[in-house]
Length: 611
Image (cartoon, rainbow, N blue to C red; front, side, top):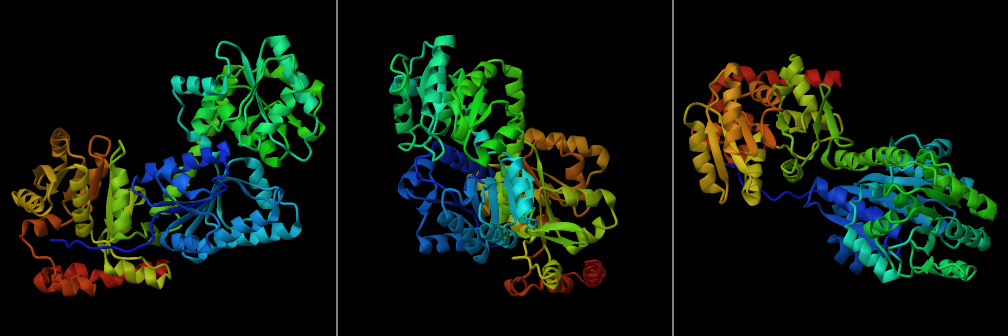
């Protein structure tokens, strides 16, 4: 039987951003990122850098460290596999040169500690100084593996400053993935702030800014909206307490207009819910515009920064005014025009952002679980560089999906077959997880200077996967072997793994015309994890041919594992396993395997020369 092991490896994520400052937009980004990462793996270790770590840890149920604690930071990135910088516009020098250097240096330090580095759903800029542009390009090119962008303007800026090494993918702000709030929760927020629920409303989400001084223009527009359309002005701060005073100052300019100056801090979904009750949103803060767009409410952007321009350009918004030269007339005209936007226009725009946003989690998944940035190509087949525990974590996440995932345990024999068999090659290249099962593959990877972290034998993976199934209450089906072998293997496994529920078995001696009968038997058993022990390529092709019919969540080909589990064949002693010479023991035990084993050196030579 496979022995239980404790595997030590880099795992999980460290997130760095402007968190813990009371900004609803930044908190929305973080909430969305954590939700997306936990959807990939509910047990994934997540550490967030924050100015208020205790508060953040309590709210999001993740570990948190103080943003400016270098010792905690170095410890966290040493243990993590992926370092995420984002979201938001962290790499810019308008608000502070100190923060500009800080966020870039955290990326460099995380990379030095062995992390993959991702800039997640981010914007970049403005970067004003030429020296800063050169520094940013140097750090990003050297240390960042992938960048997902929240706007197309950032792509152009990256090109201009010379960033061309990382993978760059268009996405959207992570907050577009947030769930909607219930009506009762929105009612409660309105009641808390004293916002009337029986009147039409217009929201002003403003912030103090050095070039924004014409408060009278906002006051005139608010007065016009109330008198012309009966819209009660609501001054809603995105960052508390920074944005509260500006609402009070403008409200004093319109004493004859009933208005509400909100003073509470409203988080992510609650903020979106409140904006969904507005007829129009006039916003300076980027996330007031993002939230309103997600709620399908017309917006007018008061821009002070390229991040506003970038978002509004992608939104195809028509109502963009610069705060430094805003006039009452321009803002009133924009209000008139915004009322003419249709629900269909808004829905189309929102749908585009929601679809693009999925690229954030997709790329994080690929860099976390080995399908990007951590792949070794052997004979043009991408083999994921995984540890056993990261493979089991990935397996656990697959069990949560509705569609069947296929796992391939790649060894020299399978890859050699796939290089000559188009159908098998397609299965290997498109499998949901492919890992290295074979000392020959580890040797080749070292020759390529991209060494696999460890060999993951198919029998060990399947055994550990069964242990995971026992924990989760997942039902298992064993398919393969001669008559009675799967039954005996099931009996032994359930005796050894407490709680394991093997709900069905079947021998592997049937032809393709019987596939549908076997599929029906597996489906009727209620199994969610399928172990297929029929040898390559038959086991892989059986899963691929029936992937759309099988109701299991995960299927894996495990070769002769059932014979070992049933006791018909002995596994190699620990000495052979430890020294990577299990093949020698099998050759001694079964001399007839000589013909198969002698092909391995030729396979290695072929793979090395092709590389």
